[in-house]
Amino acid sequence: MIVKKGSAHWEGPIKEGKATVSTGSKALDAQPYGFNTRFEDKPGTNPEELIAAAHASCFSMALSLQLTDAGITDVVIDTEAKVSMDKDGDGFAVKSSQLITKVSATGDAEKIKECAEGAKAGCPISKLLNCDISLDLTIA
Image 1 (cartoon, rainbow, N blue to C red):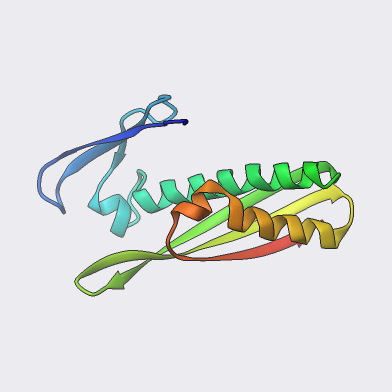
Image 2 (tube, one colour; image 1 turned 180 degrees about the vertical axis):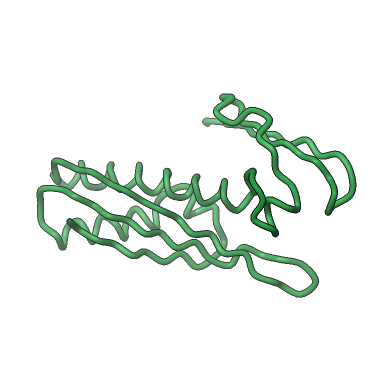
């Protein structure tokens, strides 16, 4: 079993509170976040942005594996994930993650599409998310 960790520190009420988020590796170390970075587009990060980065990076790794196993070569993958948070009753819920991926590679386009769908379904972060996941794939 592989265990990775992250942590958050929060002080104060919801709208005025000050908070930081960190990763065990210190790739993020006391990065500020709060109500204003989540709902008002102020500088800093937020949980949805971190989930989007995790989903994009996990999917790209899974796709690389699938393409390698399929004999596809000269692989370059660029992925953006757009995580959407919607009003849900009295609160909010992440309802979707849209993967927008451009693949440049040497190999059969249909096989690349098949690998991309397999990576979308099989990457560990896709499995973690309980939301609709769409894939917009461009093969260069």
